[in-house]
Length: 428
Ligand code: S3P
Image 1 (tube, rainbow, N blue to C red):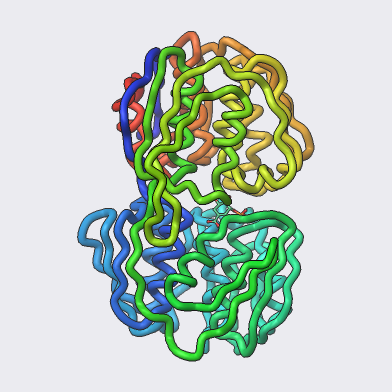
Image 2 (cartoon, rainbow, N blue to C red):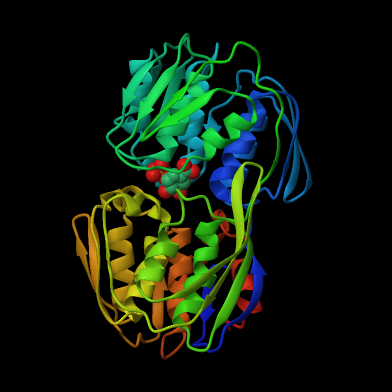
């Protein structure tokens, strides 16, 4: 699938599941690789990004038995030196988490990836690791990263970006440090790493926006974890149902960790009808079914801490904003500029091609609605979430929308087209 064609659609209805959470899948796999013994991961996300983590873990000498695309067994006796550079492909999470994991190992390693990943900033993870003794050569602030494994110290690290990837990298590095490590963030980044580590018996304590991890004296024990559905993937059918008249869609078994639910709050503020059903805990994460009905939306303002709690949802939020009455303003979201693409530029540029009234801001965008989008050809720019957001835009357009380079959707949401078809979208 390099082109995805989407027809205008009505009355989206049905109950669907989305694939496993990308952030949790990466973390479960990498921490299982660090453990001694046999770990079991069910609900694993078999996407391009997670496959990048999987092949890196194998290159580190860990056996991974893939019984079905979502059920994997990780058999580790600890990691060993890779005999080639580790290729993180397009996965920023793989690269940043591995930087922390490898910094304190008794061997050297190199991390590299596709040109898209080599453009993304890496000093944010390299600099704090250097403060605790890591020796890493970057390439002008980017990968390739050459890591000379060192013993690491404990310490207090203050970050100036609220990045969960960086926080996680530092916590993972801290497992083998000579004393506790405290990471202080400027905002509430997702806490999946802390939850998995706690389930593995590691002492990890949150105190406001700071988190302290105490190093472990013995190897990590193996892990048994079920990965919930990814709320960042569920966001696409959910927003589709919110904006396509006559719709009611339920997405079952989705992770609703409060560090991830900013979009649901924003959609409610915009007037969407959302029900959270059958909420329960599984593998130390809250999970629920989410039901949404279409409703007339109104514009809103999104800024401050909420931005971090929905950082991956701005491409699809922008589509919702084009259908909402009045103005939607996004501020404090300059991080969007360093995602898979500069998402302020690409989202504004591609939605403008469909007739949206949307303008970039240095740290966000402003959209005016409602707009009846027209058909046309748009480009994913190699960004999976942009491709899916444009597909949802196609459902409320007057004519067919064709998305070029749509194959990147598989980086996070294999089966996206099928899920949309199940709820009644005409696309393929
Ligand atoms: C992620 C954290 C976020 C998010 C990314 C996944 C993670 O990135 O955008 O898709 O798994 O920790 P940052 O840490 O750069 O904010």
